Structure formats: C-alpha cells, structure tokens
Image (cartoon, helix red, strand yellow):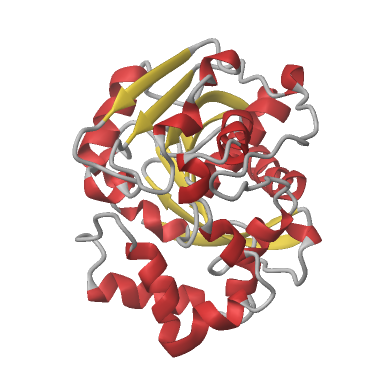
Length: 296
C-alpha cells in the first residue's frame, strides 16, 4: 500500500493505493464510521487486476473536514469524487459500501460519464431506501439510530470515554470478530483527529432522508425525480444477508433504477462483509467484471 495527499477542488484529500498504476482504476469509497484504510482487507485480493484507490472522504481521517452541515450535502461529496476521478484519468470502476455507496450512486446517476461500472456492497440507492425509511416498518425501526446521530450533541456524546459509544454503535447486532484491539486503536486515532467526528456526523445531518417512527408511516414525502435517479452503467450489488442496519426491503425495487443489475448474496455475512469475507467479495467482483490487463 502507498499513500499520498492530493488537492481536489482546492482542498486536500488523503489517498491509499494498492496495485500497479497501469491497471484499470477501482475507486473504493468507505462508509461510516470508517476511513480509507477500511479497504485494507479487500484491496489485496483485487490489486492483481486493479489499481485500487481508497480516499478518506470529506470529513474523515486525514482529508479536509470543513465545519458546519452544508459542506456535507450530497452534491459536494459527489463533486469531491468526480474531481478525484478526473485526477486519476477516469472513467473508473466505482465500489461503495455504506455511506460510500450513496456517493457511488450519486456518481453513477449524476456523473455517468465518469463511471464505467458500479459495485455496491451493503449500500442502498436513495429511492428504495427512502421508501423503506418512510414506511414505518422494519427498516424505519432499524434506522432510528440516524435520528440519534443527527442530535446537536452527538459529536460530544459519541466521543466520550474514548469513543466507547461509537464503538458500541460499530458492534451493535453484527459480527465484529475482525475488529481487533489493534484495529480499533487505528479507528480511534482517525476519529480523534480535530473536527473529524463532527464532519463524519455531518453526512447524516445534511442528508434529506426522512426517517419515520415505527408504526407511523410518512405520507408527505416530496415526489422523487425518478428519471434523474437512473443507473445506466452495469451494476453489481453484493449483499451480506445478516445485516441489521440495512434490511432487504431497502433494496426492493432497485431494478426500477438499474436496468443492468446483478445481485450476489454472500451467506453468513452482514453489514461488515468487506471485512468478514473479503475473498468472497473479491471473487464476486472478479467473476462479474471482464478482465483487462491495462487501463482502457
């Protein structure tokens, strides 16, 4: 693995890279509460076929972390990665997990000329997800944590006692055997950088997603611009079925928005499948993506 800092749209972003730079680029977008180093389990299984590039996204790790909520609007997050793709000589294949999937979908929908193929690992398209969040059912109940993460004092509460509450959030209801004490120490180092936890939570605060209370469906949602939310490139969805944060209903109807969609399930995994079964995730990707020896 090699690392560097690059300037995108006038701001600094920290990158990790694996593999020969002459290979096709795979842009790897992490979620919450991780950082670019989260891809260290998966990237070695892909670096013989791809030049893997994993940034710390805005607000995370060693990248730029502006103050406030507005800087974390989805359009800004997508613009960061569009600039990175241009820096890398795009278009590229894009892999997103958790919140990184939201940015990956944004790139595919609104910057389609920059995305060759879209791979999502336990992440959700905004339209099916919003439907599930608004229904007042199981996904609404599973997502009540979003409301807690949006509270004004959330950065202080989740940082208290050496991030013990954030660690419990990480471990809640899912397998974290991979999260060793040494690795958790690395996460705490990234969380403790000045302004980073507030920046990470800014993604939740800036999101327009509305979360219904259990049993109280929302009926006043604005109409979604369905024609603008289409994924027109080939799309692979890799799913850990034991996920307790993102339930199967969060991807129901995805075919409406992704006409060239392939679904792969990896049994025995949950939300953290990129850590639990990196070989299986890599195999699903490599089986799906045609082999190319150099950049197109």
